Image (tube, rainbow over all chains, first blue to last red; front, side):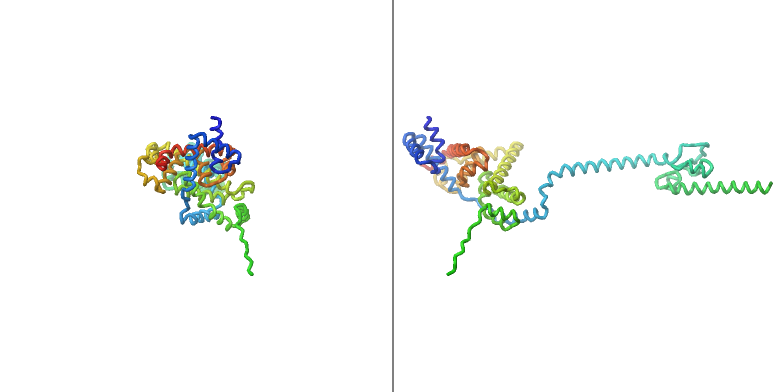
Length: 204
Length: 198
C-alpha cells in the first residue's frame, strides 16, 4: 500500500521522464509487481499524449486589429480604466444637483407667495385707505421721513399685480420703481405745503 | 567573405524592458509571441473561443497599462500567464453566478459537458475532431484547481516551477494536482479509452 502511494507521488515525474535513475528503477519494479498501478500508468500516459496532441488554437485574423484599436483608444484616454470608480461620485453629484434644483423651485414659490407681503410694510400709523395699500420698503423709515409720514398708494393690489405696475411688490416690479414713485408723491406733498406757506405769508 | 550576422532573438524580459522605455514595437513583438498560446490556454480553460479572445485582449491591455508594474524578478511568461489565468477564472466564476441565477440554462450547460455515448461506433471515436471535443469536454468537467494545472502542464508545457509561481502554490501541490487531475481525466475518459483499446 505504502509502495503504491509512493508510486502515485512519483508518477507525474515518471511520465515526464524527470525522475532520478534510482527512483526510476523503483517505479519500474513496482509496475512489474502491481498490475493495477501499471494500468493506471498506461492510462495516464495516454491522457498526457492525447492532451499534447490536441490542436493549438490560434487567434482570429482580426485579433490584432481589434487590439490595436483598443490600445489607440487607451493611448488617447489613458485614464479610461478609472471611469468606474467615478460612477458613485457622478451619481452623488446628480443627486445633489437635483436636491439643489428642488430647493430653488420651492424657494421661488415661497418668495413669490411671500414677497408682496414682505415689501408691503406692516407698520401702519394711519388707517389704510380702502382699495389701497401702504407701501414701505426696507428703507421705509427714511421714506417716511422724506414724505412726512406713511405713504398710501391708491392702486388696488390685485390690479397692480395683474398689470405688473410696480409699487405693490408684485412679481415684475422693482424696488427702484417703488422708490421713484414714492419720492414723486412726497415731492407733490412738499409742493402743496410750500404753496400753503406762501399763501399764509401773503395774507400776513 | 560576407560575415553572417547573428540575429539573436530578444528574450521576453528584454522586450518588456524596451517597451517600458517607450518602444512600442517591442510590445507588438510581445503580442505576436504570446497571442496564440494565451488564446489556446484561455480557450482550453473556459471552452469558448470568443470569450478566450476577449480575455487575451484584456490581458494585453493590462500589460500595456501596467507595463511599469512588471519587475524583472519573475519571468515575463509567468506574469502574463498569471494575468490571463486570473481573468479566465473570473470569467468562469461569472458564468457560475449566471448559471445559478438562470435555472433554465442549467440543463443546457450540463448537457454540454456530457461525454459521448460509449456505444458509438469505432469510426466516430477514432475521429480526431471527436477526440478533441471529448477531451475538451473532459477538461471542462474537471474542478478548477485540477483543470488549471493540467492545461499549464500538459497543453502549455510549462515547468512545474513556473506553474508553482503562477498559481502561488508549493511545487509538491502542483505535482500532486497534476497527478490527481490526470487520474480524474482518466476516470472521465475511461469509456473512451476502453473503445480505443478495443
